[in-house]
Length: 280
Image (cartoon, rainbow, N blue to C red; front, side, top):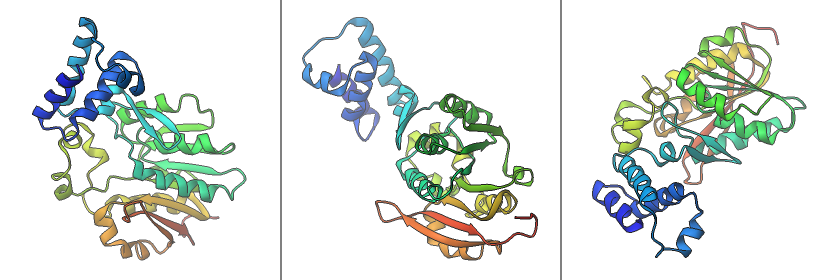
């Protein structure tokens, strides 16, 4: 079965056919990798093979492994994922780490995730912090449904269907985390097929390099406490022009820049220094 699966995926042009076939075989048989590796010569029944073959067919069409299995590990937890939500990436864990570092100095932090998607960031943060209020804002109904699934056990979490304009109605937030769409059209065309064909474009594509960052700062200007923080994940184009964050808003200053394990600038932290719209 494993040989069949890996061969089919290789023929389809998948980059890691054997790894993918192993994952799908384990998933279809509901066994761990070590059990499968210890019984490579074991034959599987017709029903099990039919199920495995169907999963291989989906993967051969470049459907993401995570959509097929319905799960994605992230930071300290597992998330339910599927069509309609962006698959959380390891790079976003740097955003989580910095948010936790800042929150550790606040007795009862109020944290908002602007464009929360599957709820990955909020779930990771809320499971680490014993106290606090956690608010997720998402404009996509499909994505918000996934966030509801992932945060259903979190009594400290509140989810809102809405957009960046909600900043006018929200106050006294300590920390805002935001992983906005930051990929340009040119970058999008170079992405792997499984991303381009299956993951929601609205969660990936930006009209202009800093379009969503500027919108988020307009939101944060009202919503954040004075001396509050907004943490952004950024992509390659924003990293090239990261000096723009120094002048993107007169109400914020760059507090910190963080590189990922590959040495790429991944997170920019801005601190609120004043506001002309709210009393702090």
